[in-house]
Image 1 (cartoon, rainbow, N blue to C red):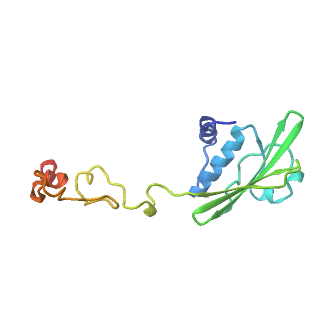
Image 2 (image 1 turned 135 degrees about the vertical axis):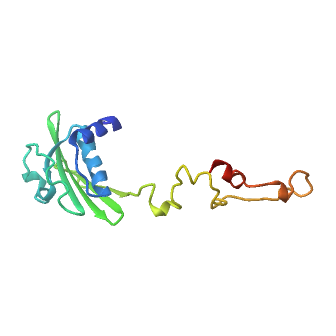
Image 3 (image 1 turned 45 degrees about the horizontal axis):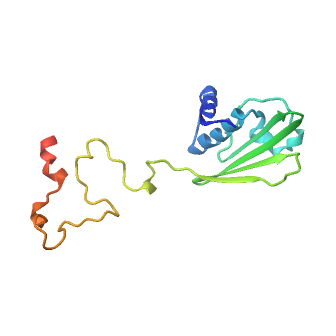
Length: 176
């Protein structure tokens, strides 16, 4: 089975052009199959034909992302005396990517399904924007979910409310 270094080597060697984040994930799936010794025999619209009629001749990656939201690949691998054929179809549904894989010709007709929800760290669903090096010194208040108790335990000296100052606000003008 291929490891992440061999998959990354396939991606770097191919130098693909991506139009969306879904293209990147689909190409990572494609690179995984190539790194495991499969040969690409059909891609794009040619996948819609029956996989048994597709030739065992290896084809290039041209036209793999010609559709906005649909991707298709047919892979073949000769293992000993048997030939494995795998059909992979991907469908972009908003923020999700549905990946379906089906082995053809060996009697197992159950597809393998995978749904990938792809977002990045700068997505607004991750909360506030990432601070840069300048705003790290400015205190923005208590972070959401944190407990803030400015008074401390009652009756213990040294925990008076006026004794505590905010670190960033006390040194704000020293760094600027």
